[in-house]
Each structure stands twice: as C-alpha cells, then as structure tokens.
Image 1: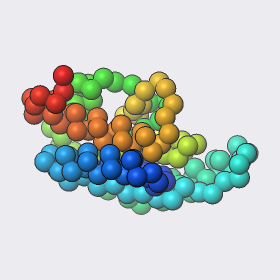
Image 2 (image 1 turned 60 degrees about the vertical axis):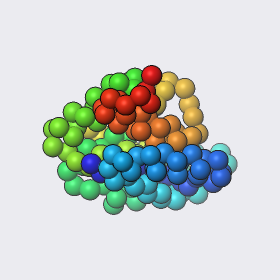
Image 3 (image 1 turned 90 degrees about the vertical axis):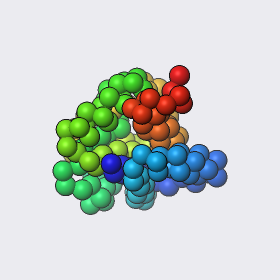
Image 4 (image 1 turned 135 degrees about the horizontal axis):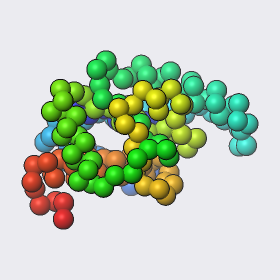
Length: 159
C-alpha cells in the first residue's frame, strides 16, 4: 500500500518534526508512506475573501500535480466526516480491498482547501469538530494512520 500525504506548508517546529519522523518510521512496516509539502501562498495579515480564494486555487493546482491517477483521495476539511479510529481502519481496509493501492490524504493551509480538491475526494474527512493548526493535524493524521494499521493487524497499540 502507498500512502501519500500532501500538505500545504512545512513543519517548522522541532517537536512536530520529531513526532512526524517517529510515526513515519512506525508506518514503514505497513507500506510506503510519503509526505509532500507545497508552500502556502503568501497572503496579507487580513486577506480578502477574493485573495483567499485565489491562494487556495493556486495551492490546489500545486497539490493536484502530486495526486496519482486512480488514487483514493481523502481531503481533510471542516466539512469532512468525523469518524472513530475503528471506522478509519475499516475505511482504509475496504479501500485497499476495493483495489486502490494508493491513498492520498490532503491537508490544506490555515485557510483550508479549494472546493475542487474537496470534490475530487473519495470521502471528505475531519479529524475532529475542533480546529487544530495544520501542522498538528499532520501529526494527528500520521498517528491515526498508524493506529488504523495496528487495528487492521490486530496489534495491541489500539486499546
């Protein structure tokens, strides 16, 4: 299984980098996991709705270049469905059984994702009804991916 995590922006803090590195190392046992970062568009401190929309469209164009054909795409967004860890594991398992060997998860900037990215997804997901910085969302996604694979494998990590 191939898992691609597409992100707008970089991890800037050492503790986020260390956490991401740890989960990426753990996930190696379950398949190839890659993280692709594209730069966030520069916006003024108080951007207009039009400036935000333009930036999201530019980011979407950059992200789409990294989405393989026939991949199952899962945008992470506010409008997404919040599911528990067991359901997430089941979603991954069913997607793989359905013949899609590449899963793509997309994490946008602090302004979210362009509508076109949300529409191309197999299913929109939300990590929580609460709002988190996108850097933390990446760590949460990596942890949930690791947890999902341990659930699928019947390992004791998930309690």
